[in-house]
Length: 486
Image 1 (cartoon, rainbow, N blue to C red):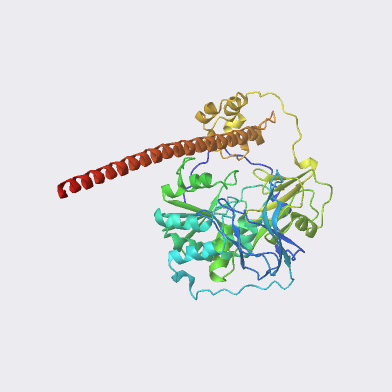
Image 2 (cartoon, helix red, strand yellow):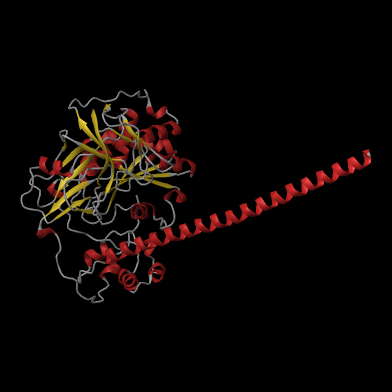
């Protein structure tokens, strides 16, 4: 199959070998599970249990709210111990609404009815079951999967792309999933294809995962699924970059893949869809890579949602040395953690603990105009020029240079010999744009309320005048009738 060239891109030091040979292990149930109600893009789920309730594994404990949302399920059987705020897995450490579950140790599933032949289900029925299972994109985007399935069907998607590239250094959870649970992933892919009616299915896997490629190729022999090895190049795992390499199509930042007849899901999402439809099991756990130079025994673990990060590191033998940085996700786009007392959520692909030797502590120096950032940018932007506009508080200038197209992959900052934190500038600017948009929406809402108030007052005035005129007319008719009677 012909592949298309991806502009820019980098080859970061990967360190995948720390955990790539480690089979998936199941993490023992912890003493407590802290299950956040905001584990996806969109409105947080609404709790439907109360403190003291006994729940089964897989039972709904919070329902979705709004069109973009997903329900949350109990990760094991046990007792609801608390409902309230708990620190979120985020650099801010701010609390979010969370249900705390005390496991009973029996891990009893709530029995669910499963179809005899899932591929005979209608696309609508598949989407409904996926929605009920609380499945979101497990590649990190955490967009509710059922919404994408319905969107794909309405937009007449012709090509389904499955993302198995896993380009982030250190992460190997998708690699192990494809190697160890191959048939389940393939069945999940076929269900997604059936749900959206795509004619073509392409599975993009970076060519540094030879065993995963071989396993997937063997499992898809004679099927409509095509396994496509793609070059190992960061950020191949970004949806628009993988689409560009596989199809040659460029999707604009403000456009949707579905507009181009494409839809993308992660291999982990496909596996979750398989579990939901074939086994009747909602999304209550996920595979997480635990790695980094400070970890005693890097591993790949199947972890119940709500497990504290501390439990993962403890299971992996603790730390060889005190880590200087903790991350949730990959080292390029992951988020910093201030401590290990935060829970694993649906979007957690990895938790990493780095030594001082693994992270850059170099001082920032002036730009030497080497243009390395320009060559590394996979979107073809001018990172340094954009940063200069942002430093000058000229956000409109940065937007004209393509700020909204930036995917914040960090490639520019990685290759910068002056160690300028370019991606930090872009993240700051995007935050400012969001704030501006909120102010604009608020002003627009205020303007509409004022217009509605004026219109309402005018309508009431018209109604009062019409009522007075009607009363006057009635009086005149009554007087006329009385005069005629006399």
